Image 1 (cartoon, helix red, strand yellow):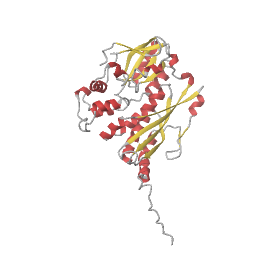
Image 2: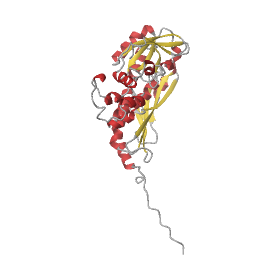
Image 3: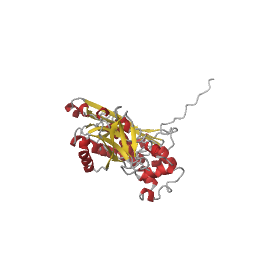
Image 4: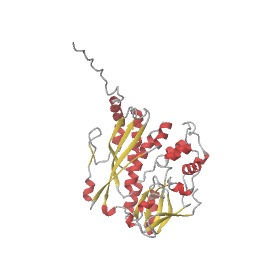
Length: 361
């Protein structure tokens, strides 16, 4: 007589660690945030299989170009976890993408996010997306879709990671192009809010290490009364509306633009240059943000290393027609930006050089 086989016990998706009900609750929690970012070109609503966006603006362009960018926040997320503050990193996520596409002179149209979590918590995800929504509003783009992925057994329950994707639009005749840069152009630096989202593996190592949330929540004179946690979690500044205002009000003034991210001024400003000139940066011509000074001191960095690690207080550099530099500065001031003339374009071979060594730190 054949031996009866026992039917396997039912294992549900929830038993495997994926809570679809919590996922649905998270989607409901973020709907208002998402709607607050919508431009008139958005078609439909979140929840579909694809985000829809009209590009009617392209019909008035001579040669419309779509520009895309993707990025993440990196290990700054570990600080957000430690301090249980998750909204500001959402702003960082948008900033890293939109500031990049802005380097072509493009206007960001829409944004999508990807949130991977060990264990889904609707409130925590809503905080993250609230920050993403704020970033999109600051950049003038729409959050039209995304993905929340639960990874049980792969990520720790409290762990999460973020990535984002942005699409922008520019008319080719108005694109910013390194080939437009010429000798005599002026370098205008736009102030950063802090370290932005780069260099955090080093910053966490020397400023946080094994310290508790309480230990990095003590105000310090070196940080103008801020705590280490507050200074390190300061969100990345979004420069989109200010730079687009310059391009509209002073057409042709900006020849090229560099977003100062990982690699600092040394390894980003050269990306905005042709091979026939150098960018000569005058150290001491702008104030270094306190958290950058503090981090460099804790790490024992010299100026050379500092300039290729952190933005050092300059988050964006505009390369500008010299006789229009004052007009550019006036528009940026009206937009609430702090700016500094940090150097000029000289003959060379497409690299960044420095004068005034010893005046940065």
